[in-house]
Image (cartoon, rainbow, N blue to C red):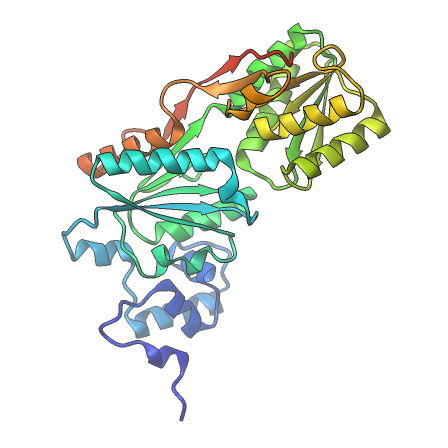
Length: 349
């Protein structure tokens, strides 16, 4: 008789979530939901999963970790996003560089993995490697973000969520984020003061938490002004220059030129501004343009971009400092750590 999937495990190999999922013929996410007593699992499935947990002798990573006192001296950085080219994003590259450099100064190594929500359960961090803590950036809608966070929590190590915009910071977890909402409100005040009566927000169809925060912050800022300014949103297929410019051109040809364009980040704003100028319009005379994040491209555009930048330490460094403090003291001091944002004037407004 050929061996079953569950017969492959030996006492020398630690049973993983994936092993339990295969034995119960369910997804890794379902096993995670059972472990966290989530209500969205049927009684029959819950019983089957618990049976396999007991049969295989699965021990949650937190309990397994308590059996050994040695430090791993490594930190995992997980980036979960639907787009395949997410690591090419300047902001993420900047996070990675600052996280790596600061961890190195404390004697820790960095284990990096980027993937989609569908393949994150297969990452080596969750399956084979041990780390002392996790820095996690996850995009997608709120439900998907919560599922991924709960999956990573099964490792039983401290977690620092980066730009996740979620309320799910229960347990040994903290949220480090930029004040995107407040930064967008500063943009709203600035554009209103410049006389803008119609603002077009350009963001991607992918529900990146930061983009949604900036869109909501700008809308809230305009509403609080009681000025009657109209805010509309243009969602592009991606933030690539081609997709942004294609969407902006179609919008302008169909609906006319807005008074202002607020890009979800500097790359989106730069692409939109180029298309506006290619169509024969002037920035800032005909349309005002703003970006977000203050990456180098904001100072290389013509005209230079008005944008919003973080005040103080870069986000990656703050994430590391927060996690190292937790490892040294045994607890996070706060549930949320927010980095202030400041409007930086350019010539695009």
